[in-house]
Image (cartoon, rainbow, N blue to C red; front, side):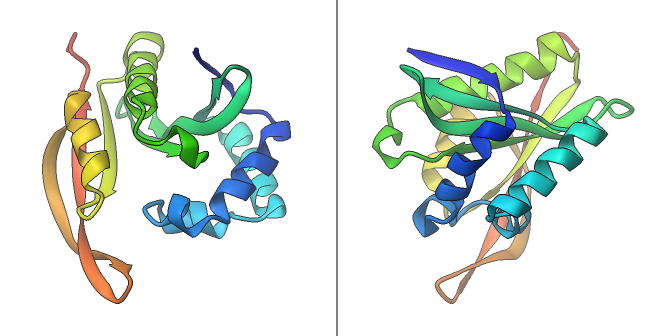
Length: 167
């Protein structure tokens, strides 16, 4: 059974462990990877708590933390926020957890926070993630060319958006 709970400082060690895994973090943004130490995660966590512009949840299965899902850069003026998801435990990849987590965070954004839209950036090489986001109702808005360099090759970054169905 999947549960979602707010991230606490006790969860930061799991995040660091996941961020040290190149396979897990290859499609995460540079800012996330730069905070891949415990000290970096603690600084990030304190900043988020102070500014209040991030809502990060731990994804748990049977009490075991397996990843995070979050709204980032929440703008109460523009009524939007960005989606972040990381399934850190590889044994749980491609089991529908990402879909459930994405639906959880967009429901939270629209129903609890009343946001107008949730946006995200995804590397065009990350086809499984793109399919997941489309399945969850996100639409492609545009492409930023050559934003990712992976194994010596450049890839574009797709901008995707999901609007609040009540707007």
